[in-house]
Length: 383
Image (cartoon, rainbow, N blue to C red; front, side):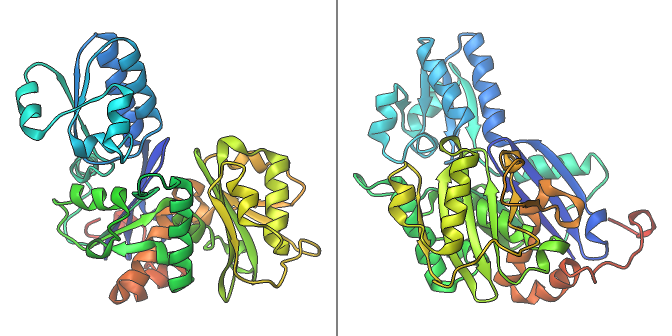
């Protein structure tokens, strides 16, 4: 059984092809630039050539691509976008127009195509991944599933804080299922408010397999739980320090006991220590994070999780995990199956087993270390 997992972040997109016949350490993987980084470079090239640009496609992640779009406009150059592509910058198209982007209909876009540089926006490009793997002799035929993770603020109503809206969503999913895989969905079940997740579904039309989409941070935290040392802990804190967002869960056999989410650029080692200690002892309040321009915090289980007499104070993952390197909280840097970079892919894999129970036995056997034949990949008839 093969499952393609793709964890799409701000800096990189991390790709892991699961094959149940192999030990997880032998699975094929790619770490390549993220889609928003690729769009940034395309926009920068167009800016240097003083070219007008037409953006088409669907909603995708921002950050680098957003900054490149602003630089293009500041250079006095035209930037057009179809409505679906324009919502990559803001769900409110009036706000997009206020940036200086000219929002055009699909018919108008067709007339512009001969006079502009065209850039297609999408987080998930299955054909590009497929072609890359084919170049190495790896086939994606007969996939049992495809799983993709992106970060999604959701489509907040006008006048409502997108930070609060995102945290309302986290809270609602935890209260409904109280497990990390609650943030994963079969493609047909994605909530309407999660527009970036739904855009991934739109981009995946060529995928001839069941599709799972999931939020990136819970995927990374779930993946970290498969580190051998982490699996030995009955209760724990896991912190995902992403490029833009930092999210921490307090976990136990009961499920999720507490959570907070902040912006990575607004926290430092001392602030993280205070937040994690308050999450552990149950004193953290929503306003402690929200009023500091983060997303928020919630405690679901009042029983404190003490740091004293613990082998591991806090488990850390994410691309900016080194922020915790000098912490006094005895951080443990998780590397499930020997590879921190694809931690989110392992979380996606586990969530796929929850979302599609008929796939769970083989997936769980692999994640428990009992999967795979022990046969090296070159001895298999095909990979």
